[in-house]
Length: 76
Image 1 (tube, rainbow, N blue to C red):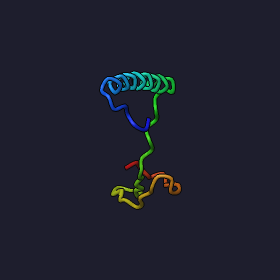
Image 2: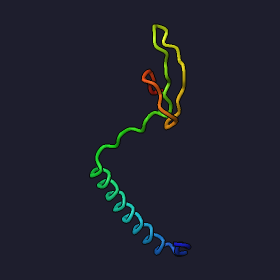
Image 3: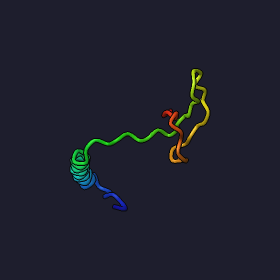
Image 4: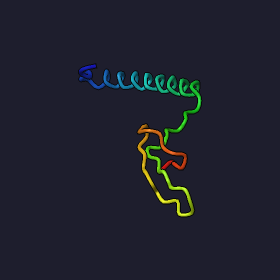
C-alpha cells in the first residue's frame, strides 16, 4: 500500500483489517515454530583454550568456525 486513505472512516477500516491480518500471521508463525520443535542454542562466539596443568593458563582464543580448537577449549 503506497498511500493510506485520507479520510478517517476508511483509515479505521484499513487499520482494523491489518490488525486481523497481523493476528493471523502471528498465529501461523507460532504454529510453525511449535511444529519445528525447540531450537538449539547458538554455539558460543568464542572458545578459550587453556593449558594443561594446575594453573590452566589461557593459551589461545578461537573465533567460532575458525579452525578446530584443542580438547582444552571451553565456551566463553
